[in-house]
Structures are given as structure tokens and as C-alpha cells.
Length: 532
Image 1 (cartoon, rainbow, N blue to C red):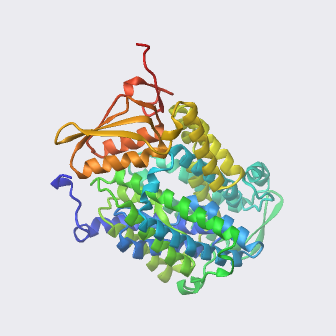
Image 2 (cartoon, rainbow, N blue to C red):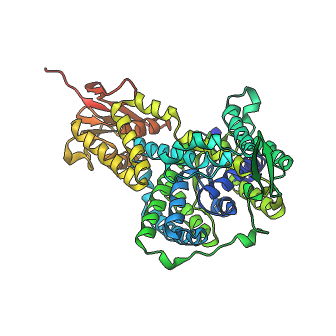
Image 3 (cartoon, rainbow, N blue to C red):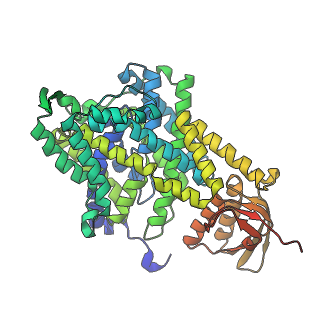
């Protein structure tokens, strides 16, 4: 790193970090409330998590520019835990889900101490994106009805989506106006010219939604007529909060923590939360103007400790959240102080101005979550996978469909198995699926050559990366010869491309002997030699 690019110390950057933290606070406040409600937790639980993520986890070694807080990607897991562990008793399910969070946080801490940060390099990107797209559809299916003020009959995502026309027909007009306005703002503002698109869209939503609900008198239970029909509105359509933040603190119920259902969700929390968080940290590192490389194990440890605190006081699980972290960087954040300031602003707000939160319409929060879900399952994701090749699209769709039909763990497991089977079909030797055949030799004092034989695929990339890291530690440039690899998959090419863009001294050779499975530059490649 050149001297000009050396990041300033937090003490030198507090002004820019203060501004970035404030802007992220404006984005995090409504999202934290909405994610908590969609997860079956009290709304304040999401804010508690964001406060812990900023005020505490900042100083535990978390990645410098990431924002820690609740994430839409964990909504499905959390809601499932509350529902399955509590049945009809949501409050009991909430407390038992907190116990699951305590155990899962302990698992994350153990994973971090065991150097499991490398998990972020194991899972293939098409499987992860397929899982996230399914989560997006599930979020949309559940939240779209709230934007219309309707309680749907169905429970499963496809049933809920099929009910959308009926909900539109039966929509509560005043509630629907707020929900539709929220969606319009969220979808349109990113495309506005100039500085307008830099204004946090959720802030604009709240600036319009709160005056509207005050005009409609949501704070008072009453009926009104519209187009000859009678509708009811009242405080149930607004955010409900305890009198003060101390009243929100809730202890876990450990009575079912070792039951099969609880253990299933422990695995889901620990695995999905850790992978999503690690991937977010790596993505944020790419966006960091100073090009700092985060310690993934240290960040995972900080996240695990933060999750332990959150679960013990009634909060949602946290991760390094990519949307808020990107907003943090775009707002000019220079150090971890921005995350701290964002947490402090949240703490001050809920302590000093809790009455403002109780004026937020649920329809506005639901609109934000519908938008978030749509982005996770955006048509662009499907188009991108198609451009990468039929093999990538097949694995993405398999993970997507199986996750929708079953749950996240099964969806991810099936996606990985299908990818391994396709690798065998495309010529990867079975013996090299999990261990690459690597021959190394030093060309000179400054250069090392790695010849990879058999296959270079997602499931053996960790072994390849060990050699890459060793060469880096020894200060050697690297020539990576892939000419003898029968198969080089998209995940490996994507990760190598990422490292090269980071400035790593890595040169790829031998790919001219392979045929791409699509026109995309990072498509999977099969060995193809001439007859000579």
C-alpha cells in the first residue's frame, strides 16, 4: 500500500466518520425496525442489534468500514425459529429463538477461533446467490400484503404470492396509499439525476409516510368509508414500542435449546449468518478506497461476541450488512468510527425520541422490505447467471427452487451436490474434487510457479489459496499454470479475478487450452486440446 493510500487513524477522520455514521443511521433505523417485525421479533429488537453492532462490536476487531446490524437475509431463519419453537405463542417463540441465538453465537466464536473465516471462500457464488434470491421471494411474499393492510390466508411463499391479486382487491385504501408511495419512492429515487439519488430513500419514505398517517389519524382506532366500503385503521397499523429501551430487554428461554428443532436453527444461524457476513466483508473490502484487507477470522469473532450480547438482551442476530456498509463508504467513511457513530445515533434516538418511532406506519416499513426482497431476487440476478452459462444458471435455479420448497440448509446442500455432479460430468477427476493436485517450483528468487492438475474448482480452492497466501507472505510473484487442469470453474476464476484486482502479483497461464461454457470471461472452462 502506498503512503498516499494509507488510511487515516480514527482520530484524524472523526468528522467524515460522524457524517457517514449519521447518514447510515437514517438508513438503518427504519430497516432495523422492519427486519425485526418481519422476523417475528418486537420492532425494538432490530434497533438493539444495530446499537450493539455499532457501539460495542466496533471495538472488538470488526472490519473497518462494515456496518453491523440485522439483515434481511436472516429474516426467513429467524421467523422460522419463532414459529416452530413457539407455535401459536409468538412471545414464547421469540424467547426460545433468543436461546437459539445464544448457542449459535457460541458456535460462531468457536468457528472464529478455529480460523473458519476461510468459509467465505468455500461456498460457490451461484449457490449463495440462489439462496439469497429465494430469501428475497419469501420476504416479498410475506411483506407485500402488509403494504396493503391485508391479512392473507396462505402461509407458504407461493400461496402468498398467489393471493396478491385478492389482497389488491381487498386493500385498505389509506394503508395501501402509504405502502404504494413507499414502493414508488424506493424504486424511483435511485434513478433520479444528480444529488437527488444520494438522499437516503428510506428517509424520504418516512418524511412522507408519517405526516400521511397523522392526517389519517392512525393513532386512534376508527372506521372510514371509501367508495361505498367501510375500512378500519388504528394503532395496530403503527410500530409498537415499549415505554423505554430498558423495558425492551428480554431474557432467552433455554427450555428447548437442545431440541432437534432448536439445533437445526442453530446450524442455520451459524452457517448462513457467518457465510453472508464474511461475503459482505470481502465485498466491502473491494469498495474500500484505501484497499484495506480485513481479517475475516477477527471479524467473525467480533460478530459472534456481538451476537451473544444481542441474544442475551433480546436482539436479532447481526451480520456485516452489505447495503448499509456500501452506503457508509459512499457517505465518505474513513474508519470504524462511522459504525460506532451510527450505533450511538440509534441509541440517542430511541432513548430521547421513542415517540417518533411509534408514528411510523407498518406499511412504510413493509414497503422497504419488499424493495429489499426484490433486490435480492432481482431479474438481473437471473440474467447474470444465464450469461455465465447454463451450468451456473442450473445450479442457481436448483438452489433457488429447493430453498423455496424446503428450507435454506437443504437448498444450499442440494445446490452444492448438483454443482459437484456437474463438475464430474464436465471432466473433473473425482480424486481432485476436494484436493487439488498442485506442483510448485521457484522460477527465481522473486517468482514461484504453481501448476494445477486435475481440476481447480470451488471445493478445492481452499488448498489452492494456501499456496497463494504462502507465496504472498514470502514476497514472491506467482504464475498460476492451469493448462493441465481438466476443469476450471467459475467460482475459482471469480476469486482469482478478485485477488488480481486487489493488486496481487498473480499471472494466469494455460487457459488457452480450455473451452468456455459461455461467452462470459469468467465462465467455467473445460480442457480442450488439439489432436496433435
